[in-house]
Amino acid sequence: MAQPVSSTAQHDAAVSFDGVTKRFGDVTALNDVSLSIRRGEFMTLLGPSGCGKTTLLKLAAGFLGPDGGSISIDGRLVNDMPTYKREIGMMFQNYALFPHMSVAENVAYGLKTRRVPKQECYKRVADALALVKLKGMEDRKPRQLSGGQQQRVALARALVINPTVLLLDEPFSALDKNLRASMQVELREIQRKLGLTTIFVTHDQSEALSMSDRVAVMSDGRIRQLATPIEIYRRPSDRFVASFVGDTNRLRGTLVSVSSTDALIALGTTQLKVPGESLSGAGVAAPVDLFVRPEQLRLVGASEPCALTGNVVAQVYQGGHVDLQVECAASGYDRLLVRSSGDQAMTLWPLGAKVGISIHSDGCSAFPAE
Ligand SMILES: Nc1ncnc2c1ncn2[C@@H]1O[C@H](COP(=O)(O)OP(=O)(O)OP(=O)(O)O)[C@@H](O)[C@H]1O
Ligand SMILES: [Mg+2]
Image (cartoon, rainbow, N blue to C red; front, side, top):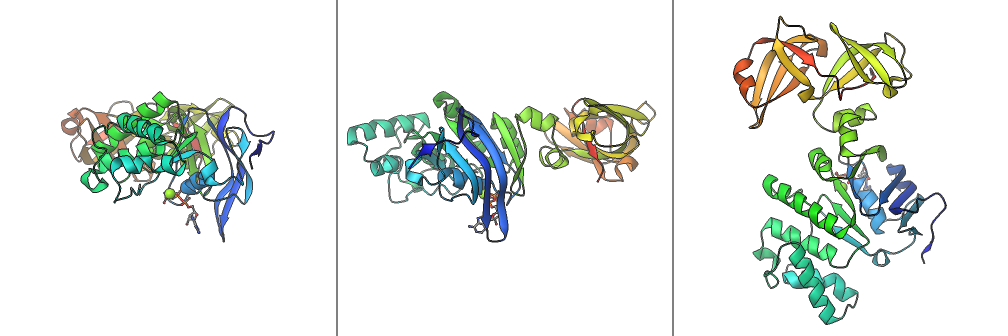
């Protein structure tokens, strides 16, 4: 039976997890997780394999119960509420359409189990299929559809029940790159149009950054950072987030000074200003790890003023940009990744060239060295 929500949960939240823990034997899949998803928000859970993403979705859906903490949906505590009462739309990686049923029958399934009258059922299936651009395919069987079309049927099946929350677990991982990109855009358009609260799981960081209102970065059953994609990319809260989300380079520097807002880091012959919070406990002259995105590095002639010098050891042509790998003493001879738009860098900086590297400090982050 639904009960009033606890006083600690947020009332404007569509879904909230409050101190939720889930164990499987010795494994703590979720460790004291607190997370609120706002109404109409597209929230992504991003993290490496085994970090607890699917477990969190299963708890929201009611397939699993928490060992500690509380979960509420629309202001109601649902810890003990069965799945069928939660009115949740779901789509999983193996979206498992019923092979013997037509497209329309697959989509209608959730309505039939809810005993929705036939006439209304017919209209809602037609609306859901129109929404996912499958009008005219009602009578086909799943095997007569492409992968992307099957994915749309699964989405229509999740949407047709007018869910309070949509849960999506790596729904596009089986699709090729182009199809995946177009499904991402379409899903987001549908989700915005319906104002549907959505929890989306992926371990693909570019998918998370491109689709979400906010991203919860997870590792080892915990949420490491909860923020907008831009904040996650530009102001990672710890070294795990800094290295997991987006390509990055790690350079060893020395702390020159630190305040609550900024820190000054010495690196080679230059000094760089970075956000200070993450270094607040560190002493002057302490070694720090500086995380620099590949697009913040720029190659210049070796004799020009620059932070570092190195040698070009690889060029990777990527179409719109070139990734150059530069071997550099300051990175402990780890290869630095330098991203350059266009393709001029291919001829300007050939293999073996000795180069200078300048750093654009806006968007760098630094943490005490490990
Ligand atoms: N039913 C279960 N029994 C035992 N252990 C489980 C069970 N379900 C999940 N786990 C464990 O809990 C942890 C979290 O699993 P979960 O499926 O939530 O990870 P995930 O983040 O979704 O990973 P992936 O990206 O690989 O899907 C893992 O260590 C997993 O082995
Ligand atoms: Mg999973």
